Image (cartoon, rainbow, N blue to C red; front, side):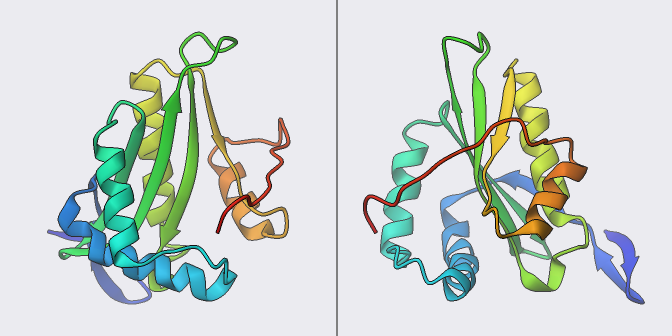
Length: 162
């Protein structure tokens, strides 16, 4: 199945689907690239990611994980938490991670992943979708704004454990 033309090269169609355990090694590779940039010190070993994924799979109503795939290559992923609140009767969704392979950034893959989460949230009658990104990352902030997310609250954080 052929997709759109990007820089003179025909790109195969991006498939957005639920993450599976066999995707974890490729998700791990994407996370390693992110860690190179941020040097967070988090344990992103393959063993740790598999353990986290296993815990998430036990709570599928709470955690939603999707990948973007082209030609059997996981080229991006998104994770979100769907939770109930007293104020928002239907609940809220919080996008925790969105990572797209560097060679596909700016080509619509991240957009498709976020739109998948927004569609899922609407189907689940979720009232609000949130995302957090560094205030020092204007490119990401602008990206999320193009998808309808707006500056409506401030999220404060503190690293308790690494």
